[in-house]
Length: 399
Image 1 (cartoon, helix red, strand yellow):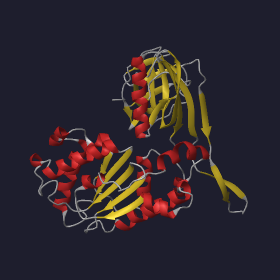
Image 2 (cartoon, rainbow, N blue to C red):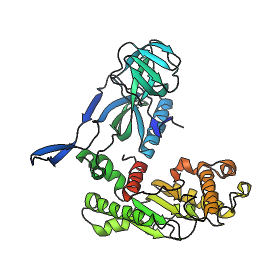
Image 3 (cartoon, rainbow, N blue to C red):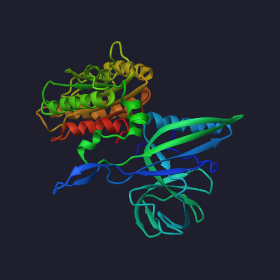
């Protein structure tokens, strides 16, 4: 499986230096009215958004397979970790997790990932920077590098496109086009995108993508229902105005809220629309108190998975294989938020084990977490509709 860095697929392959490498930084702002009434500029990014492109050239079938496997994983998750080729630094000295460079680490900061490589080689290992002082980097863990090796920054973001070109024989060139992640300033800026984003990313991800909200309305989640519903309505507005050219009917078709009273969350995640326009889904399930479908109360782990869960798991596997795109997340209530504390604790323990494929769930097959099923135990109070929208954008790799 390709190496992961903060849930981003690392693209470790060195570029073909006979092709040009391009690095760009984007600053985005809008007109704002200042206190004097004069025009001012309001920044949308806390820092410039970095992007660029470079080419990986290969000449063997084995390396072609390796490169394609990594790129496919990065495109499926919509998250990639890409070395900033052309911005290398030479290692002067290594002592444990402290690396001293030959010159000041001007393009490396605390909290950033760095990778190590030999000259003209692939990335062999990566670590996060804990602190920077002049040319000295303190890493969160030691890197297997020595004096004379190369260290370079790694940017987290997404691959926008991968163009391929045959070079003759088994040779092939992959042009990687990458856009780094950056935090947006105001909440309203969550809905802002550039013209490039529209063409290469937003449209390709959001168009003809179903968003299904399943809400258990049987009791203790009542306080969260309005915020979840508001998130769905706000999403409809976004899709209507940005993706579907003002077509409200189209937005209503692709964003749906369904109420149901059952803890069989995996059954809901496998649900699909009859007569669907595309097998592309984001499914969010909000679960209330537990029942006996997937576990007992108090929980008896050795009796899991139940026959109901096994049936739903197999159905989900079939549905997941059929889908072109799938992202799922399950939310459960805070166990202490109601008088059903024992039920909630039992359900939350079951949920964590089932999604991660722990204990007896490992025998079923692939862990649900490996198929883009996430979970959050105990929704904290004070959540807003924007919180759930942010979760959706994160699932899609748009934040």
